[in-house]
Image 1 (cartoon, rainbow, N blue to C red):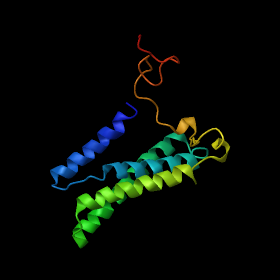
Image 2: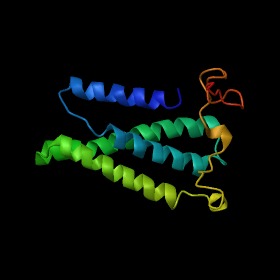
Image 3: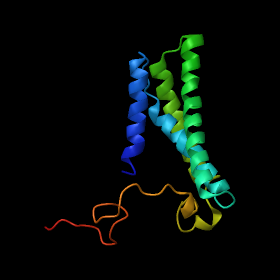
Length: 149
């Protein structure tokens, strides 16, 4: 569920674009920049703002950032007649490289550098799980289920 829901929302966005006869290959980049701005807001505002406001603002900011990122190839197509397939694929690569830079540089908590590259998001600013814990879910039992050999 944690990994499937964002991909389902991206798929929904692609369906809407295809229904408008626009080829959008850039959904991955839009997801990445939306996730980056949401993570940044959770890190910066998580200790000072109420949790529900941080989550709501993160969802809105992530959606707007993804839309802004999608607007760049849209502008290029509308005003400069640039092929949207090529521009959205290139925007994906730019978003990936920006994500690599931010997550390995400015967004790393200095206390966590020795332990790994964790981003310090306060637990209350994370979205609550929408399913109960079970042995098959990531939030389930401490011992993972292993197949018998």
